[in-house]
Length: 511
Image (tube, rainbow, N blue to C red; front, side, top):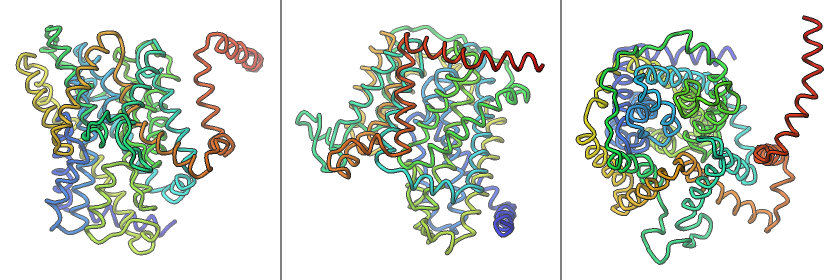
């Protein structure tokens, strides 16, 4: 333990020089700028910076990449709050409450809360990265195809509670997202599904174009159909959040931080899943549930804490097992290998100090987003002063470029437009896009896990219900679905009252 603390101290001391601090600030600032632009993802940012930093020393190059990774996911909250368009997939959960606060003239407050949540979430993840890497890596290693299936299914069942008051519409949109995720070649035998003879559909509907279409292009169409300017020209609210306002939600920070780290730990479950699961958990436990989707501080704090804490969580399997937890961490792992360091079980033996260097780099990135988040907000708020007649064509252009830049395919632009048109009509009927995106994100994981599990069990479904972790996930999933049946919900409430009433009476007598 003392050796680990000494190595961690050396890692922090090695960053206390002007060069490292400058690299960290530049990487975080560039990441924030990229994140603010809808469609430009952390994966693209890291990939481009990898080619630009290949000649730098290993630690300097990786420091820039780590800071840009953290900065991009944080920067995506700006466009989510100001334009109702998430800069990255991980920020989609911040749209509902963040943009609702902006519509009330509290954009500065919303960005301050998002900054606080991002800082606390990343810092929580850094502590877990430093303290629990071996243990958490073993937990992730124990998950197989059966457990991943139930995890993904549980995430989709939560789509009914994410937005709105109609769970049926949420489940329908989650199911639609699952269906869209199945388009293209399946993962085991590369057999085309739902392609209708179109070769372009063999690669499936990419997440980023679909996300841009569901939130970006659909927002453009909605604004053009209802040309009402938002009255956000006079915003005088403070950007810096009050300490008591942040401290009041410490339970949300701890809960969302833990959820983000755990979802980040599981390979294939991205930052967006951490945000959505944290948001759903906050909505299920809060006393202000009616405020969710209308400007809830609790919801915004949970979403930003959950997605940012998943970044260090993704680094744990990447470093300890050589298994990246998300697309950005996969590109980051490739960059680490390019610089002569091989992630995996031998990393703690061959490059033990590098693990602690990664902890220090992520800490510096956390400090950088706090600095920029509190002092570079006002210029971004001027985006809301631009008239829609000017802003919407710019957003459409950025959405088109962002969709095309993901894989340099014109088909992705067509996908973005098709999803946007469909989302436009669905939104007019009261269907929200967040459950659709959640189903799209988890659809591939659910499909591959189900098929892989059936192959391993020779077609038997019993392992899905007999393994200990599967039993836990299945029980929670089924129970959460049954709670929406009125008779079952009333029975649970009566049982809860019967159990808690004697305890409350006993506590009252002792008090």
